[in-house]
View 1 (tube, rainbow, N blue to C red):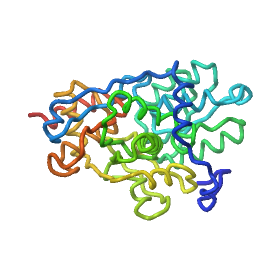
View 2 (view 1 turned 60 degrees about the horizontal axis):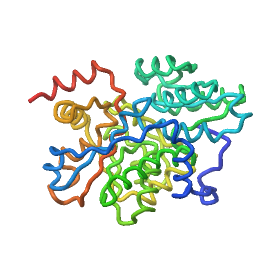
View 3 (view 1 turned 180 degrees about the vertical axis):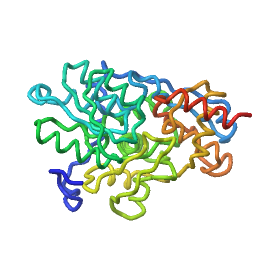
Length: 340
C-alpha cells in the first residue's frame, strides 16, 4: 500500500501526542460521546484473585469506543475540510463512528470496507447516511481504494487508528478510568491497529507510570503483535475471526501507533477463537452483556488463565470492553456452543 505520508525512517520526526492532548480531546468531544460506566465483576474478581472492573464502551452512541477518536478528528477539521467531506476505511466500527459523527455535523462521509466486513456492519453505517464502498478481501485493499477516492474527490482521510487526533480521542477512556478508580494497577486493552491501545496506555502511564498495560489480540491474525516481534510494521494475511473488528494490518507506513505501542506495552496476550467464543457466552450468561468478539478478548485472556495464576496480576484490574456490535445470530451460536 502507498500513501503521501512520511516513511518509517522519518517517524522520529513526528510529534507524539501527550496527556495534555488527551485532555484537550476530552473537552472537544464532551458533548458527542458518553462517559461510560466502570462496573465491578464479582465473578471475574474471584477468578483473578484481585478486583476486576469492566469499562463498558458498549454504551457509546455507536456501540463501541470508536466514536471517541472519530469525534475528536472530525471536530478538529477546518470548515473547508468539513465542506469537502471525509473518507474512512474500516472493518466496520470505525466507519460507523465516522458516519454517526459526520451526520451530526452535516459532513458527507464515504467509508471503504473489504468484502470480509459483516453485512450488518455495512448496513449500520449506510443507515447513518454514509456512502459505503465495498472493495477487496482485506482492510489493506480497502485502504488502497480509500486513498484512490480521497485523491480523486479531494476528501479528508479519517484514519481508524494511525492519527494523533484519533489516538487522543481513544485515550479519553483512560481519563475516566483513573477518575473513577485512581488505584487501577493493570489495564487489559484490545490490540489491533493500536489506536485504542496507544491512546489508553499513553494516558494511563502518564497518570501513573507503574500501571501495567496489557494488549490482547486474537491468535489468527495479530498484526500489531507480529510487527512488534519483527521490530517493524509487517503485513500479515487476514483470516476470518470472531474478533472481526480487530482484523487488518497496521500499515507499512505506520507513523504513530507502532512506536507508541512498542513504548508503552508491558505484555501481549493472544486468545484463540475458542477462548473468544467462550468469553462471549460467559459475558452474556454472567455479566448480561452482549459483546462482539473484539470486545470480549480481555475477558477471554483472564478467563483462560493466560495472564497467569490467580493473584499473580496486580489489581485493581480494568478490562476495556471495547464494543457490543455483534450479530445476534452469531452471539446465540456462541451461547449454544459454550453452554453449561
